[in-house]
Image 1: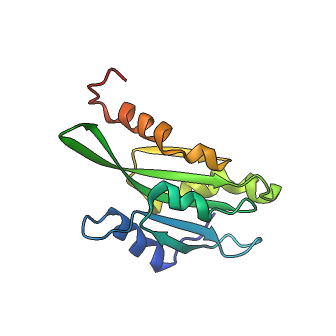
Image 2: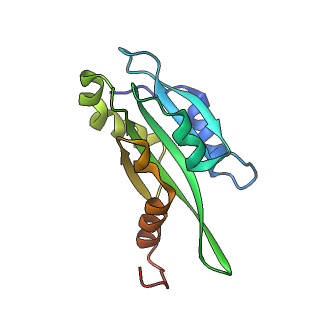
Length: 144
């Protein structure tokens, strides 16, 4: 079981969800290679593009991102995405525990439209994620 007692995680979650701040993503990492304690490592305002730059191929991490997109000229939507990152050089024992720990993370980062399992940084390209969000949103007028 992962430990998510760091109060900064809940604060950052509320910050990303708030319309009053520019923060649109947070990143949670394990305290150390052998630890099951998760901590907030970073937040940012640059969306998926910025988040991709800070991910470490040797780690397993969890990210929560606010994504804004347009369905047409007059409307924009904001949806939330949970990303479970398993870097290509992540240790085998860490990978083995991800599915169990992800459930614990989901109990804290509760509200999201889709979950993205990312193994490579290209798994977090904005266009395919927005396409998935449109499909999950239910009201798509572009025939998607």
